[in-house]
Length: 535
Image (cartoon, rainbow, N blue to C red; front, side, top):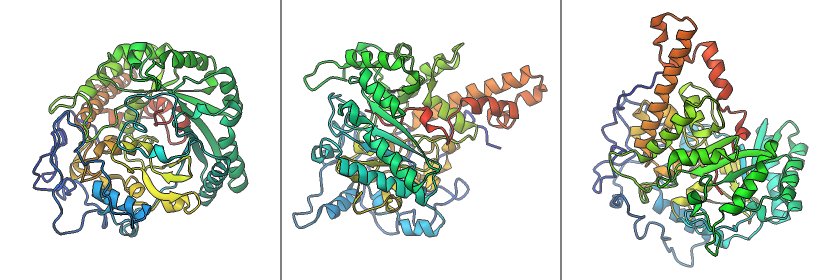
């Protein structure tokens, strides 16, 4: 039985900073110190930094400051150092946790088993026809796209298919999910769009015939045509579209390379996609505090999306999000305005991933998200040159943050599982800061999205830069679910005392569990949502 989420403030571990406050410029205790024994279980051996002095972290920026002047600068190890060693040095400099403080072998010895990769993001194109001013691929810390071939070659596609099939067979996976991504994957001709998916399905059918392959393409929508939709539908590839709202005013930052707005083309593509509901995965939208939340939500509904993904901007402690202020929760305010409209709507007109995932986690149901909860990361990215990387969202932290030094020619996906960057994202509570481990919301929040925890010179073992927003959002939704459970029990004739049962306990009733589970995402149905990657 799950513990009810209350409205009180969680007791922080004394050695951790308050995550709702800016980092202390002169901290006396590292951010990854463990909480007291009675607050949370200690991390397993190999997960905490070794004893001894550590360098002080850099001073904290102001609320609107960008990253420190050298936050993304390479360490310049010299021409005699090869690229792999240079990348290791870069990781160690920018993110001591996990790259110098996580002993993967010790974690394995302590019982932390690797989880196989289940989602493969294929970067079929590394260039885009838009130049969105906030894009994490082109406009943030990592500029590695400049060194990538514009398109994935047939040879790379074949090698990727072989490696994916090998992994599926080794782990007897019931299903794997492919995401065609970029850049803009629809820059490929219609006849070429399905080639990567067909190659993977053929390879998997030979090596792991019981493994089912699902596929989605994530696009900005501007290049959607009848021909492309026909080709995608014939290959069983669903379409997710990235958009900032359903009106031109919401999309002023989504422009082409000449500065011309891309909304008209995207809207035309979405209207076309809405006529093919079997191919429509949904819409992803980054929260913009400058836009009215209800107007944004209602305008997106005009495109009949089966699902809407509301994404927090990729930001961190060294590059805080717009509007970040101590004691304020502007992102929770924005999201809760949408939640109230969605929750109390007489007809459920779309699914909203973020809200459904929080509800599922509150009820103890499985989810597939990496942005909340403690589900181990299980995504690998394959770049156009065949290099294997971690999730794209890490590119918002520092140059090379997603890099692993691995390629399809030299490494298997099993080897990726022991890379410190991915291993850290599969450790659950043991990878979190002490404050997070002690927090009563940890099963739902999970420390927040991994890139949001980053601080230059420390790494990824802080609470989310959105911690205060997440706390308010989760508690508000928990209260709404609790009221709904009480109403359901009262209407069913439950005794008054029983009707006061908290939502987490009410979920144990078969009727309540069946009702909520029917709408909540599950580990067996991630394809019901568009992938949590933006285009």
